[in-house]
Length: 147
Image 1 (cartoon, helix red, strand yellow):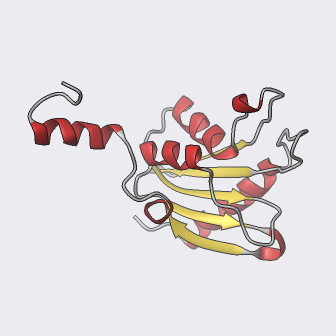
Image 2 (cartoon, helix red, strand yellow):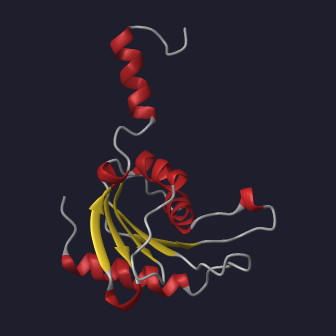
């Protein structure tokens, strides 16, 4: 199902708004994200850095966790806001998490001065590693993966 212009505008506004709540004392790089569930609900997240860098949570994963906590499992779109002239793409970890809940996800990247880039998760992460693929591998082989 294609995301409407009104839905994109709602997601973009939500991503920009939540970006201001990011906790980024180390990098100063604030990111906001908003995901659109299949039922039309939107969920937001911002990056939260930690002194132990590996524990940092990206905005995209925070938004997905908010969606899952509210019972949404099927995501249609994500808008990601950064203050860069060329909008940033999600990191590899975020691409992987997004693929679990929205393999056909549409992605809107937002940057400074109205910069926008529309793409898809399939372009950003071809052939993702997901439970659905694992189940397919089990079925195709006729055995459990790893046996």
